[in-house]
Amino acid sequence: MTLTIYGDKISGNCLKVKWTADRLGLSYTWIDIDVVKGEAKTPQFLKVNPSGQVPAVVFDDGRALSQSNAIIWRLAEGSDLIPADPFDRAVMLQWMFWEQYTHEPAIAVRRFHKTYLNKPDSDIDPALFVKGSAALARMEAALVGQDWFAGPALSLADIALVAYTRVAHEGGFDLCAYLGVKAWVARVEAALPITG
Amino acid sequence: MTLTIYGDKISGNCLKVKWTADRLGLSYTWIDIDVVKGEAKTPQFLKVNPSGQVPAVVFDDGRALSQSNAIIWRLAEGSDLIPADPFDRAVMLQWMFWEQYTHEPAIAVRRFHKTYLNKPDSDIDPALFVKGSAALARMEAALVGQDWFAGPALSLADIALVAYTRVAHEGGFDLCAYLGVKAWVARVEAALPITG
Image (tube, rainbow over all chains, first blue to last red; front, side, top):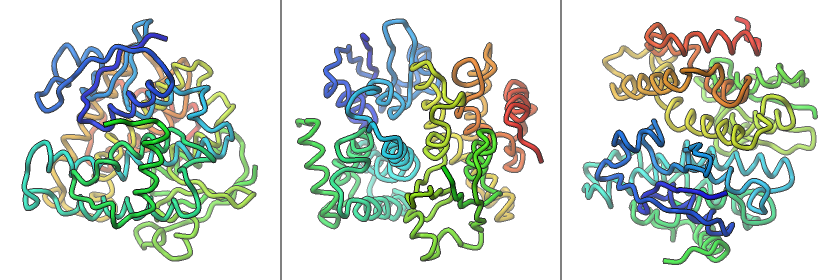
């Protein structure tokens, strides 16, 4: 398939799509959408994704898809990034839903306020740090005795979770308190690979 | 498979699992977990789901799974609740991720504060009403010219989205402003079927 990806490279959600496409050797056109400048809310972009969010992709037949984790599922279906075992596959989805419900709304949002809106800590909802720290502790516990989040190898769960975990320090989270997570980040970065 | 479902019937996320299992004719044991009483945070339940959330399921081999939308995926794999077409299947997941990221955190959370914590509107974050109304408007637009959210028939996307949409009035949202959504709720209730 040929592919157009609309994304902003400050967004881990968008980078998930880039990394998955790169890992699978898919060719694509990347169109930058500057979220901070409001480019995801223009009438032109709302035709691509009426929800006004990046990432979004358009396939060669003109059909569009949004939601980072649904997009990487579509790109990776039939590849080794989705476990063949049905239970492992469901565990992969479990972590991908957990990422969007529990991890991203704390860790990515705190990073956005701190690094991209340049807010001082005192202007950021303190619940974000508490929730983000709890999410990292949950990951640390899950990684005891296993290298990857779902099944015996790298999967979309790792790609989804690494996106904002590897830049958690930009949200004020110190991964030195989560050494299992830190080692897993390095493992995922090497496996994808992620450079820069 | 034999199945144990841990859930609270005030939770739409838990009912998704019940409805899917019932629709598929699966036999299961239902174990009530009272969220308001804190039963999802007991040491005993944390052994089932270390994230302390319902629903969670345990299969006959002792393996556990959490996250409502991952659970219904596992139960329904290979059934007509998941579209056979790969693009439709990805659209289904798109709406399921959207539900957990955008819809549930506004509509279900406002319902919980209003109906289960009995808070007056003045004590509830006004952003929840704005976000929930926008989510319902997004659904209304998506349903123009189509009966179901993904593909030509009822799918897990409809089950995921109906769970809190059908009780949105308990969160102070009036579905009479979203007549396409209202008609779709009735369609999903009839197709599942949902009684009571």
